[in-house]
Every structure is written in C-alpha cells, then in structure tokens.
Image 1 (cartoon, rainbow, N blue to C red):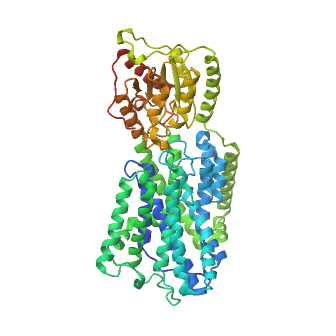
Image 2 (image 1 turned 90 degrees about the horizontal axis):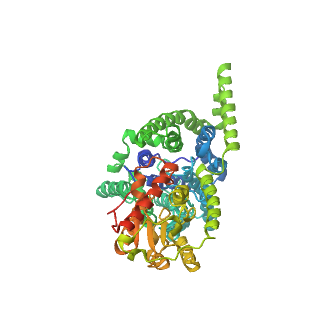
Image 3 (image 1 turned 30 degrees about the vertical axis):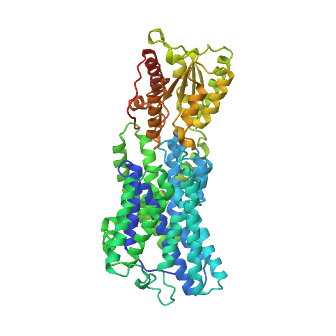
Length: 621
C-alpha cells in the first residue's frame, strides 16, 4: 500500500543548507572548508525519511512491500541521476582529453550505483583538486542506494524475528541500528590513516553509513507505532524537546555548531574521520528532532523561503554542480578561480531549475511512461526535434564511452619518463661514483658547485615530472623517482644505495607530495634517513608544493630538520612553484615548471657552496 508521512516543511530548508554548503565547498573551498559535511546532513535526512516511511508501513500492514519501496526509490532517484550522467558523458566525451579519462568505468559504476566502490578500487581521491573524475560526486548517491537496498530487508528480518510483535519490534530495531551506527563510526576511525588519502574511509559504505543509521535511529524514536496516526507520523508526544525552552535552544545550538564545523574543519584533518563527521551527523540528528517537533526557533530558520527553494531543488543542484565546475576550467583554462565559481553558480542554478521542472518533478509525479510519452506529444516538428535530440545525445554518449582514454596525459608522460630514466640509471650505474667527502666540513673557500656525477636524487612523481630539466641542469646525475612514493618507501632505497656504494656525495630528496615524513606513523623517519645517508654527505630536501592539507606540516618538519642538522639544506620548490603557471594538474610541473624545480635544487647547492643556509620560516601552499 502507499504510505505517506507527515510533511515537515523545515526539512526542505535543512536540505537547502546542506546543498549550499556542498556547492560552496566545491566552488569556493576557502570560504567553507568543511562544506563537504553537507553530504552528511543529506545522509541523516535520507535515513530519517526512509525509515519513517518503512515504520509507518510496518505499523499499518505488519510487513514491508519491497517491490513498492524499491520502485518508488528508483522513480525518485534514477531518472534525473541517469539523465545527468548521460548528458555529462555526452559533453565530456565530446571534449575528450584528460577530462574523459576512465569515462567507461565512471559511467557503468555510476549507472549501477556502485560509484563509490569503483573509485575506491581505482584509488581515486575526492579531496585532491587534481585528477578527480566528473562523476565523483555520485559516490554519495551510491551509498544511499545501497542503503535503500539493504535497509528494508533488515527491517523485515527483525520484524520476522519478533513474529511481527510491534511492542518488541521497535526496541530491537533501535538496538540493531545503534550497534550498526557505532560499528560504522569505529570502522572509519580505525581504518583511517592520517598520512594516506582519506578517500577510502570517506567513500566506503561500511565506514560512512553512520549518518544514514543515525537518521534511521531518530525515526525509530520519533515515528508513531500507532495505526491511527497516519496523518501525524511524528507526534509531539514522542519528541524529546517537550519544554519550549529546550525546543528553542537545543536544536538551534546544534545547528550553530554544525555551521561552525563547516566553517573550520578541513577535509584531510584527522579529527574529521576520528569524530568530526560523527559529531556533524549527531548535530544534524538533533536539528531534525527539533524540526519534527516544530514551533521553535530552528523551525523558523529552516522555513526561510530561499532555503526551502534550494531544498526543493537540492537533488538537481547536487547532480549538476560538479560536472559544471569540472568542465568550465577546461573550456576556459586561463579564467581565474573566482570567475569560474561565479559562472558555475549561475549555470548550476539555471540548469537545475530546468531539470527540476522538466525531468525530476514529472517523473516523480507521473512515472516513466507518462512522462516520456509527454516528451513526444504535440506536432510533428516537436516529435522530430525530441527524437533528433535523443539520437544525438545517445550517439555522443556511445562515442564518448568508446573513445575514452584509460590514462591521462600526465600518466602517459610519467610512464615514458620512468622508462627512459631506468635506462639512463643503468648506464650511470656502470660508472664508479667518486669517494664521498664530508661536504659540510669542506672549507667554504674550497667548495665548488658539484657536478651531476656527484649527485644522487630520490623522489616522487613531481621529481619524475621534472627529470628532463634535472638531467639537463645536472648532467650525469642519477635519479630514482616513482609515482606515489612516500618517505617510507625512499628509506630502503637510500639504505640499499649506501650499502652498495652507489650513493653519491650530494643526496637530493624530493618527497612529501604523498605525505609528511611521519606520515607512516614513524616520527623518527627523518632521523633514520639522516643515519642512512650518513654525515659524510650533503642532503638537499625539496620542499613540496600542492593542494594537499598536509603540505604545511611536510614543509615545517623539513624546516626544523634543516635548522638542527648542519649537512641538510632546503630547495624551496614550495615558493618557486607559486610563481609558476605551468602545471599539468596543480601539482606536477610542465616543462617550464620543471626548470623552476631544477633551479630550486641548484639554489640549494649554491647555499652549500657559499656556506650560508637560506631557511624559510614557513611555506604554505
């Protein structure tokens, strides 16, 4: 049977806040660094509403109709989600290039609502500004759909276990929900590695389902089990804020706390995954309880017209905003970020309004058959126009999927450089390195700029991207650089080179892009590297640059190391990169940027030659 629940108008306003936070985070990240928590607000709302519907059905029928539930969920979500996916694929496939990398995997993973697991399998990052996919935002929709698939089955199983006894059903269902929520919270905290990209725990259904579960728990606390209360499914007598003072202040303070977190918490902070997202979800749950009660301050706030307008269109806005902000920089590569953001806001609002009125609402109200039939109603020209548009979009989508590259231009370039580098190192290994001298104790007046055959370099993909410029500036140098390399991987390489006698007098280390030295849980990493290299060699650390939150810490620890260690010098790539407009993706330099990278290394060697260290106080990207 069709089950309706009492409409709580303020929930639309809360949706409006959530989608505004997400859009601001993606368009103007510096303004609202914790805006990504808007997704957690959506999770709590979804869990609350879906469970409320299921509980009303249980109260009325003592059962759950999977067919009706899943059909309604698909009719609500699938039409617009698939429409945006197809249109995005058609446009991105036409543009091509790096924007279309792995488009096939993106398309099918999204179409079958497993986008989050596909991104985890491909080690994609949601928080990097570089190399992110045009369908990345579908991860949250995938988690919700997976929840909608599993949750009614669990409700039905608990109902069977208590033999459809309503008195026993609610407490047992609440306990199960609370246990699953805590398990998801613990899983996120335990699996999260502060020195690795957090996307695994952020994308994972297992680690990020607690918001949905908390919303479900709120529904279990507030939804009436009485059959006669169909029109008032969330009666005041079940609300925890019966006193007006509590009803006014507690939800309002919870909302203020939620907004404060959105303004201050950063995506890659350890706090985010070890309590931050949980707190945001708990605060949202309190706000939802206040809105269900009504007649209070939070209800007035969330019924502001603009918030409700945004809330009604939140699904359309969420689906459209991300591909728009991904495509615009490709079409206008030299446009400033603020202008891209403003244009993206205008386009998102316009396209979302259109799709809300012509795609989302008609399918939700009239279903598939009647809506599609309506597209082809009218005169011959209308039918031909719609038919041509359908064929054109279908052809562009198919072509885009067929021609989508599997590797980005950067990945191809790094692979090619890695192969050339391996051959060059094999040739260099045939020559015997000079006997190392204690470079730090050579009198300043006797120091000369070292030639390439006195330099060993070990680094990550940024060094690999700069290898041609490094070898041009330092002929004869050996470079061992690889993608995704962390300090923990560089240490055994240095130890092996030292043991084999192939580690040269000057050691250049270009690391930190993938995490600070203590990122693998070893605070003594720099000390171990210092010991592996030895006091008789000069160490040059390249200060990393990029859009990762750990960059500031990665540079701070190198500054501290240079201050306390006589034979350690710094190549200030972090500062040089700020003057560079030649980046492939915001992290890896192009040809011009690579020369600046090599120049920063040369400047560090000049410091050794002059005997004067130039240690910056800090460097933030």
